Image (cartoon, rainbow, N blue to C red; front, side, top):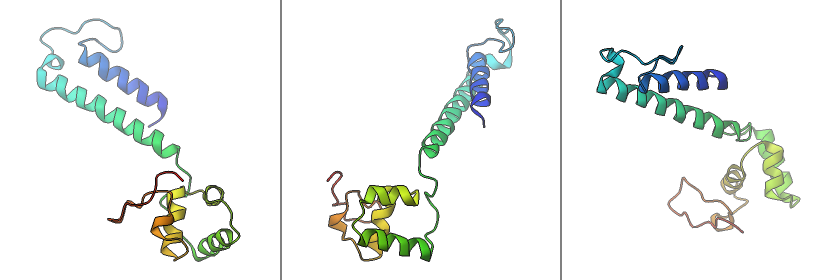
Length: 134
């Protein structure tokens, strides 16, 4: 959903929740179905769902483009070379369009980094002992 469509849909729902015609701003008749408690609750749930979807899309747009993509053998080879040259992990992450957490996780999987050397937490292990910042 585009930003404009999201804002317009939210405006329409908010107007209906407030008992107002979204097109002309006039108050809706008291006996209209939109004034029923269950309908207002459903409209509020729709507003919340729109907000949640928009927030998720915003967070997703801020992530590097390769988040969630599989690692190719070529990319792993490149990662090993960069790490072997001592390049900063943040730079490596930027080059691969991945998060620092993904880079550290892959290095750990490849046996090039120990869990206690990570600067990010491994969410998929019980260890959780890595330091937040280093």
